[in-house]
Length: 504
Image 1 (cartoon, rainbow, N blue to C red):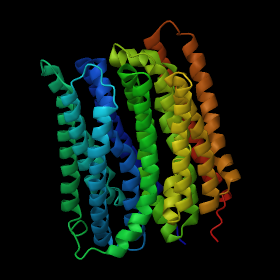
Image 2 (image 1 turned 90 degrees about the vertical axis):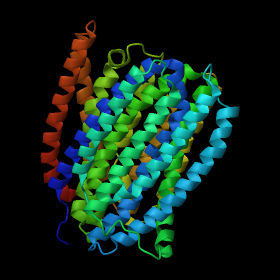
Image 3 (image 1 turned 30 degrees about the horizontal axis):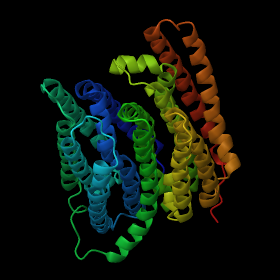
Image 4 (image 1 turned 135 degrees about the vertical axis):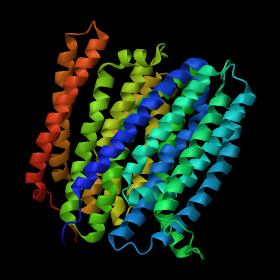
């Protein structure tokens, strides 16, 4: 089969998504600093605990978005005659999921807030209003997903880069609003976040209706057989997403129960920085996933295996460029960012970044296995192992140890998840584990060892000068990664045909 993979398009899409992330990230970090200063540690901790339901979209949204994108992209790889039918089925399905999520949050969420949560001196009425705004923001973001899936399937990444400017501008307005308000509250902040979600959702919908007017129109009657097929496929990815959400937000609940709002604030800040790694990895996955699915659908196995291998190395290198300087200079970065830093934030942040790096080394697994359509066993194992991370952290806390050690136990479970992903690549798509280790893990570990050693040596001589140390270590890290990307791309092209795939 003639190759269908366009690596140049993947590179352009990656750069567009990378630019989007940089702009959004800068606005998010600035807004986090303003929010912490305006609301105080207890107020920020309340938002981290109660408003964390908004983060549910980050865990539910990505797999749900990828599931619809897989159906749309697979159809495009075979001619694209069923786009409208797929969009209609996806929207109907996700509307039903949104209703279920809202009902669960309005019952179990409200009960937990009013009966089980420690909110310190924060007014209970304000906490309840915050939860309602967070639930509404979650619903808006979930309903938006089919439009985003359509944009990603068509690889219109330029739209995301432009929309990021709007989102960043809205975040700046939210921050300025908090600064200008005499007595800012968590409830006000939650309301402004809802407005931001409404605007961004409307932008995606309007863009799709203008660019793909025929494909995003509802097709009546709805194809119930397609909805069942999508529900089966999406249900498995949603199950894993729920496991990730339960683990992440379950840690928030456990931290609140064992340590209180101050450590909730530290965990919330660490989670925001840790999400940098996840966002970077997911952006690269978004850029390469359409090409991976199209290659599988069209029978281009050479292009398929090349992208699966290269995507993980690219993701690890790009994320390491951000993560390693932050790990080495955690206290300096946090002080510059926040001014007053809650206790244990640096340690929790470093662990979150390491967890993200582990995930990045197998970032293309979901797209590769999803392309085959046979993912039941894979998603069941991912869900079980993810929940094992929460159990491990809970046991550590119950034994009286710190939240840092508990999060460390969860990171240990991530190594088990990594091994399971590699095993499924071998089993489901035929990429031999030994070859994946040779052509992906060895380059990644080599990069980590070289970059870490040189960065530590460069930073050692500037131990008493935090800001120059940050600049020098970042420059050294970026230099090593630039060298690696150049060297790896050349060597990978030479060895592309040595990574056999058994497609029988």
